[in-house]
Amino acid sequence: MTLSLAASHAKGKFGLDKIMAASAAANKAIAQYGRENIINATIGAILDDNENLVCLPTAEKVFRTLPITEVINYAPISGLPEYLEAAIDVTFAANRPDAYIKAIATSGGSGCIHHVVHNYSEIGDTVLTSDWHWGPYSVFCKDAMRKLETYELFDAEQKFNIRSFAEKVQALLAKQNSLIIILNTPAHNPTGYSLSDSEWDQVLDCLKECAKDTAKRIVLVVDIAYLDFAGEKNEARAFMKKLGGLPPNLLTILAFSMSKGYTMYGQRTGAMIGVTSSQEVAKEFEDINGYASRATWSSINRGCQRLLVTIHKDKELEAQLEQERNFYYRLIQERAAIFTREAKEVNLNMLPYIAGFFLTIPAKNPDAVCDKLHEDKVFAVPLGKGVRIAVCAVPSKKITGLAAKVAKAMAAVD
Image 1 (cartoon, rainbow, N blue to C red):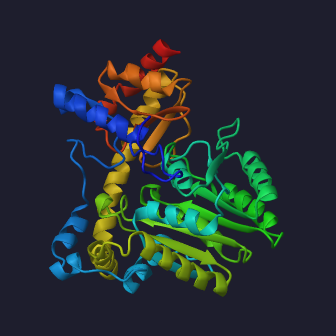
Image 2: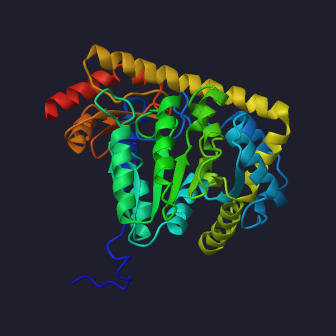
């Protein structure tokens, strides 16, 4: 019998997930065969066409010129006030809703998910998200002694499945009084899908109807990690105006992150942005999430907060950074277009991709497909029902022919 000193709720937990395992396998192959001979489609970060990790030049320039005191000093627990204002501004752009809006600094977008699960659901509650989702959502729930349940993201026409969404929302609210819903849009991970304007109306109509029962508490978390790679700035944010005027027992929280839009992945800087029609709910949002921050990470990276403030205050710097970001948005779109075109040529079924870092191919046995791909020196991430390809990280010359390799591996396995 293995000796364990862990508490009962902690026993058996371990840190390596399928994404990390796939990345580790790719790195091992690179060390053995050379980077030029490996297609590493596991990385959730932008690599240029020379396969170098991208840092937006303006972000790097500003970061390197920050006073050392701004890099090493503590920040207030809830975040620098000017950072919180900047995070709100860049999140909404010209689409700020008519609502009370508050922000708390978090450890990336994932810090927002952590706090929401911890503070807005009861132990034993079930959190809802789509069947295609970022795997760590389940980890956040399990670690907090909650459960994760899913609705079907796509209907038969490959559009947002509002019927499945509504059925799951109603069923869970019949069993529990508080419900957290995690909606990753636009540029969904792992599919690259974005909800349309009419699909957003359907989601909010469903939630407003459920909120008529004032005994129920609904929290809609919109994970916007890939927002800045979802299309034209204000078009991608147009849905945000719809978040004003919602019932007071329906709170929306946006998970803002500097990891993707500012290429500050490892700096772990983000914010949770609460949008509510209730001043009381807004004050509670600040209080309970600031308290949770003290109990979790104490305070967030001051230097990266100052980076955002510096860029946002200087409109010339901000315009320059947006131009640099748009270059990589177009590069990722070009890579995805190559894969999509070639997938059609080889009759490879893929989920609808609009924008973002990833695209996904449904598969009956994703692990076996990915193992088979290793024979072609291709490394992708096996999901529960498919294979994820990180078009953000694979140069165009290696994207060419990749769909055919995936189709060949699937044919061999299936």
